[in-house]
Amino acid sequence: MSVSAHRGAPWIEIADRDWWLPALWGILSVLLGLWLFMQPVVSSIVLLTMTAVFWIVGGCADIVYALLRRTDNWGWRLAAGIIGVLAGLLVLGHPLYGAVVAVTFLYVAIGVSALISGLLGIVLQHHSLSRVILSLLQIAIGLLFLLNPLDVLTLIAVVQGLGIVTIIGGAATALAAFLSRTHRHAGVAI
Image 1 (cartoon, rainbow, N blue to C red):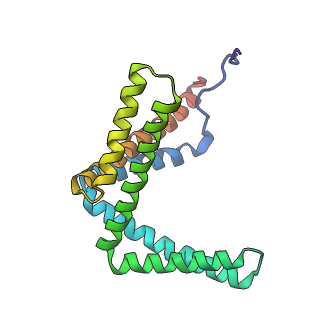
Image 2: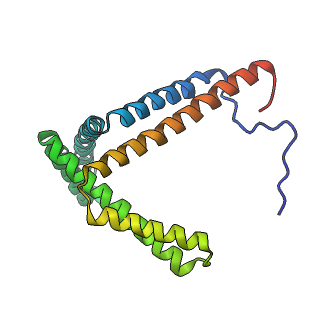
C-alpha cells in the first residue's frame, strides 16, 4: 500500500479567520495543566466539585426528559438521572469523601487496565525482550494501583500526570493554531 500526498496539501487544517479559538483553547489548556501540576490536591477537589454540578444538572435533565417523553428506555433514563443527582449531591455535600471515592475508582480502573494490558501482552503478543519488559512493568503498575488505591503520593502523581498531558496538548493546539494563521497570511501551505 502506498500513500501519495498531493503537492501543497496542508498537514495542518487551516483555521481560516477563527484561528484564535483553538489558540485560546490551547492557552487555557496550558494554564489548566499548570494548575493541575502545581496544585494537585486542591485542583482534584475543585474539578470533582464541578463534575458534581454537571451530574446534578444532567441528572435533572434526564429525569425531566424521561418523565415527559416515555420512550422505550424511559425507566433507565429516569434511574440514571436519579443516580446522577444523588451522586452529585453526595459529592457536593462531602467533597473530600467524593474525591476519595472518585480517586479510588480511578485507581482501580487504571490498575485493572494496566494488569489486563500487561497480561495480554505476555500471552498474546510476540515475545520480544522489550515487549516482555513492558508487559511486566504494566503488571507491576496494575498491582501497585490495585493493592494501594488510597496512596496520597499516587493521587498527586496521577493528577500531575494529567496536568502534564494537558499542558502538552494545549501547547500543541495553540502552536498549530498560530502556525496555521502565520502560514495562511504568508500564503504557505503547511
